Image 1 (cartoon, helix red, strand yellow):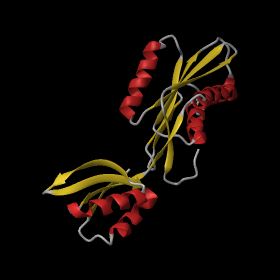
Image 2 (cartoon, helix red, strand yellow; image 1 turned 30 degrees about the vertical axis):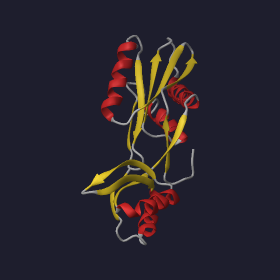
Image 3 (cartoon, one colour; image 1 turned 90 degrees about the vertical axis):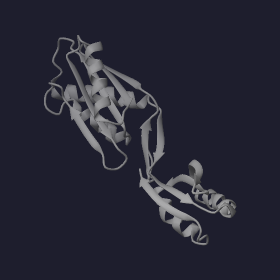
Length: 206
């Protein structure tokens, strides 16, 4: 978890959780995922691999700011499965993630309270076992400059902590594409003001 307004957390790789109550088994899978199509493919795969399971409930969140969220009870009582799973995504402040929980019925009804605890606990364990990485919302730029300004440009980028993505040439002028943390966006323009031959283009923020 992080207090940086430009920071967000993602999964490094798939992790798993498990919960058992009165014979019912709940297998949770936390998966790095960035879009609905991939999430559905994973869910379909779990349904095929666990064809004897009675439910595959899930929740997802995509995006760094304008989130795309969804959760599903997959036939369990309303808000007893998908919402508790999604609650753990919110609690861990993680995004670009799918959590699917596969339930094998043990022969005894757990009740809504028992189901909420089960799905929440399985999802929580999958995230506790996960390796979470910090990513930043970045402002992406393309600059074009004269050859004699190369040293100055590199010095400014170093001070801005800019991450160079690519270097090339356009109309015999060097170009550099780079990104900085979004909170540093305005500093890019002010930092290059002493160099009028440096042209700056803001490409996107993501």
